[in-house]
Length: 67
Image (cartoon, rainbow, N blue to C red; front, side, top):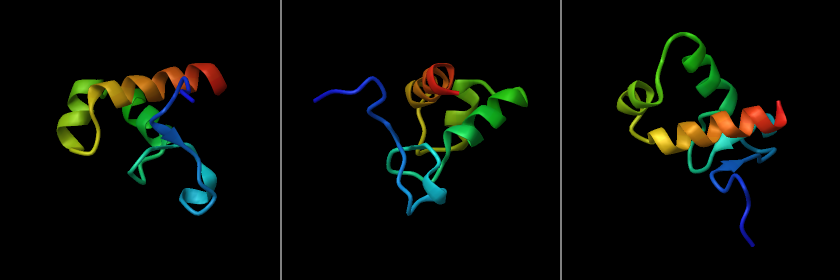
């Protein structure tokens, strides 16, 4: 089964169930905060090696859909 957001997970044991990038403790909310302070997907990915521009774009799409 595929999902529209395969790299976004919400586990009650991680960050209280906030949606996060799979395999990290980086929440979608935090990614959006970084973008809101002028970060770009590319600059964020350079500073955080667990992230890629594609993962950041998925977080943006997730936010646009659910928040």
